[in-house]
Image (tube, helix red, strand yellow):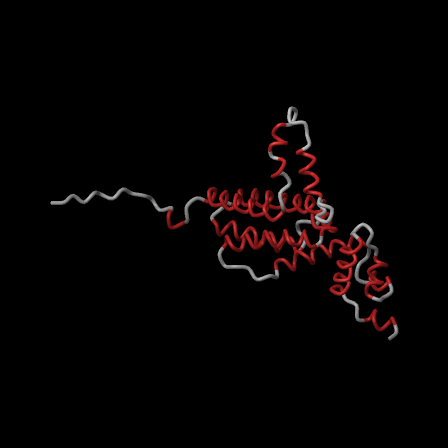
Length: 229
């Protein structure tokens, strides 16, 4: 089949799918539009018809991933919905560690991020959190997600980096670093364990800040005691 026929069928969605595959395989820094064209079996100029340069393609890749997160089915209960959203975003970072920087630097007004922020803010508003604290919680969660995405991307489970770091702490001079040596075995825990810990603390904080449910906020007027005749 002539290459021209393949080029005619290219669209943004196919290009983004191919670009994500190339980035996951070779790393975002090494990815080029020529490599994306080769992945599609098309001339690189076909990619340029949809994306002016690599920066435009990378931004669209990141936004595409966030849009996919929002498109999932979420529970009705705000707690379960909020937990599911946090896990989904974390899974996104874990599945595409080579484009963590692109995800972290995506403009907040991009369609994908706006949709995620709307979902997250809706959970917090439903919980009864005031607008000011919703912004604080949003910033806290965003910072955690970006930070843990970078951190987990730096660990290599293949070469046992976590265990190696624990052993290095265990080998420290206990006179100079008694605390580090004492907790060496529990340092650098698995990402799943940390996430569950963070979710537990986060939900506790949200409930505490939001206060009692609306039905329980009514004025507590002491009822007159009923004395027996």
